[in-house]
Image 1 (tube, helix red, strand yellow):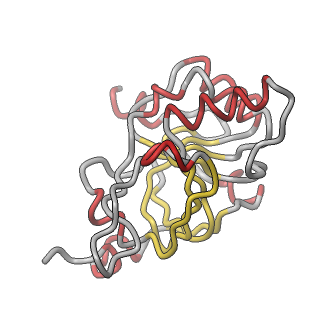
Image 2: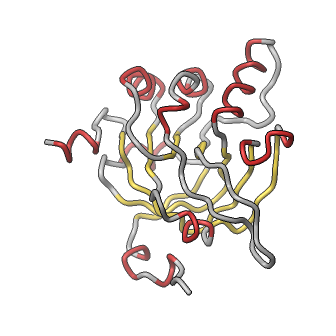
Amino acid sequence: MLPSLNQLSFFRQLRRLRVPFAAADLITLKAGELVSLSGTIYTGRDQTHRRLCALLDAGRSLPVDLAGQLLYYVGPTPARPGRVIGAAGPTTSYRMDAYTPRLLALGLAATMGKGARSAEVRQAMLKCGAIYLAAIGGAGALLSDCVKKNEVVAFIDAGAEAMFRFELEDFPAVVINDLAGADYYQQVRR
């Protein structure tokens, strides 16, 4: 059996943040910083993003208020008996880049997935005061231990691509893009 993230001493030393975020917390974050997230977040992949933007195009309200929130790019697998959720590893973020600036303009404070973001998204993050976090790719089973509650809030017919509300406890992530425009991936490449 794999150890839980909380059993690994490294993860107990991360900077702890609550979601929805307080603006003061985002200001002090730096690219490359390791954080631990607790609180309520929402999920969405390609289909959720398309549907959210279609609602906006139709002049309708979104199913949730994204202001101050984090949107995690994940398509969770079904839970095994006795579990809250199956694997909850990140999806490649650039697939959502066409939709992200529009959602950031609504007050979305952070997105989380894996991989780099486009120049357009990085520019929109700077303009809107948002950050980008990376979750640990390939660790979906371990990350699922950090999900304490899980419920579908929109687009149930989309299956794993529905919009879920997760209650997190000590979910580890890395700050990739901070409010100053620093990009951890670019820093590492140098």
